[in-house]
Structure formats: C-alpha cells, structure tokens
Image 1 (cartoon, helix red, strand yellow):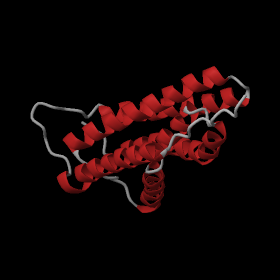
Image 2: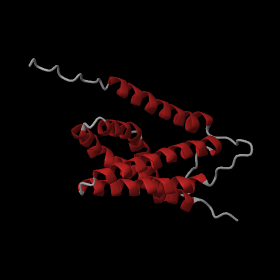
Image 3: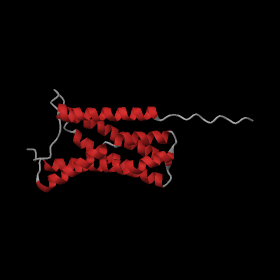
Image 4: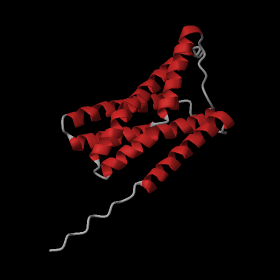
Length: 186
C-alpha cells in the first residue's frame, strides 16, 4: 500500500490576523472613549449602576478562573471547559458594560489623596497594562484548545491565567477603592 499523504497543515495566520484586528479595534474604541470623547451625557441614559455590575462580573470571572484551574488540575476537562467559557463570557460582558458606562459617563477620578492615591494609581496602572493581554491571550488560548493543540494551549495559559486572574481581582479592588474615595451622597 502506498504511503498515505500527510494530513494538510492548517495555517494559524488568519486566526492571528483576526485576533490582532479584534484586539486593536477594542483598544482603539476604548482609547476613543476615554481619551477623545471623555464621556458625555446621553439624553435619557443613566448607567451609574454599571460599576457595581462590572465589579460583580470581574469577581465572577475570577471565581470561574480559579475553579477552572482547580478542575483541570483534577483532570476534570469538561468542567474546566465550561468554567473557562464562563470566565470568558463574564469578562466579555464586563467589557461591553465597561465600554457602555464610559461612553455615557466618562472616566471616574480617584477623589482621595496621599499614600492611598499612590497605591490606587499603582494598582490601576498594572491593571490597565496587564488587561491589554487578556483579550488576545484568551482568544489564542481558546483557539489552541479548539484545535486540540493542548501543548500550545498550556504554554499560553501558563502566563495568561495569572494575568487574567490579577486583572479580574484588581478590577474589584479598583471599584472599592474608587467608591471609598468618593464623598458620601446626601
């Protein structure tokens, strides 16, 4: 019997281009909202409830990430898949709500001062910088899992998991630090 032809290899290039375009578009839209538009009243729209929702979505994503890590360490692959898709959905919904809030209301400034403001800004800076890696990293991780390229999936998630968890947890911390710095409402 003649040698069977090897299975054709599929190029990952188009996926990487897609990931780069999606990531750049999200970053460009976020930059537009925060740096150029700077929010502004949209008549009849009040989304001041969304920061609490966003903190809850971040906490939920962190919980799903931690549970997903435990599941895969125990060999529960199916549970891991569901938990990671849930973490991605929570973070995705967070991103949509975050963009909507800042589109309508603009940026929220830390009202305190002194050492706590320095701590807040350090946490915020690390949170923002590391959050840039979550969307492309998560997309690449899901892609490798979908392609059943688990060795590549594992290489990505070794650095993505702690970054994503840190970003989710610090999102909650930032929410409470901001709320704690604001004067009490009458």
